[in-house]
Image (cartoon, rainbow, N blue to C red; front, side, top):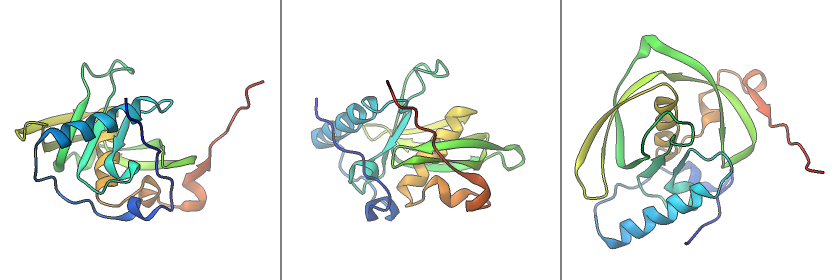
Length: 168
């Protein structure tokens, strides 16, 4: 089981727009498996994008099965948001494995319709609501070189240092 280290901001790979995936082969499946294994090893990890482990490709995973809001993870290749409910924005507190010391109040659409390719290269259209929609937007932002702190109204008022509790 291969696991790669999470890239931490200001690593430049986190600010790069990712390349489209054009080959659907065993190497892609192996990479997605590594991405999956890496995410599963992160405490509280519910999503990950390829640039977070140093690969500038349009690949991301959202897994809310632990939260019992989804029955299976979403493996997205070349995802794009087709529609969002602009009138139904919500402010949510987000964190990120690549900015481990901070959380922020971020405005996100509560519902989105996305289109992506699965591991077989087949087009999938999916309507995401609530936490799933928020996670999908967060991971797609990574693929476009954006971080959640880019979406705050005020760095001073909306970004917070994470509280770390020491184990005794």
